[in-house]
Image (cartoon, rainbow, N blue to C red):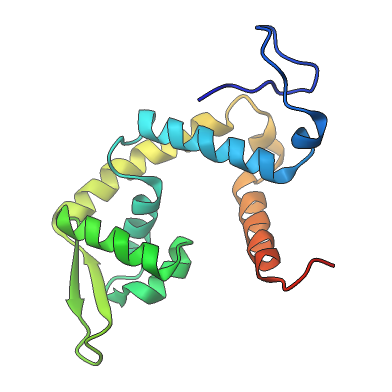
Length: 166
């Protein structure tokens, strides 16, 4: 993964700098953040368990024995991605899925003992990563970064549903 310059002036190593219109685009910044987060997660948290899988495990812990489709939104996933991730987590023995006694099409999910253990292990590492990502930025002292990102996420999800932009 390349390291783009932070400004339009360029970098010290002679690589081209991102043009100002990209630096001014929130989507460009969001993509850079996400790419860096994926790399940091894989290196410092877990190279096998992905961030979305962690989100599924955390959501299941918060809402045990709920159906996987209703949990998808809480994990910021669509239902087909949720189903795929649940299948993978079940194969790894981290969750258990059972048919709902009221509707066989619904799968109720819960953490296995191994899933609880794995979630606790990864949770500690993920929080350390969160601290590292926000340290030395000055932002954590003056701003609730997670709230800002979640507020932007809600807004961007709403904009994605617009028929047209105003």
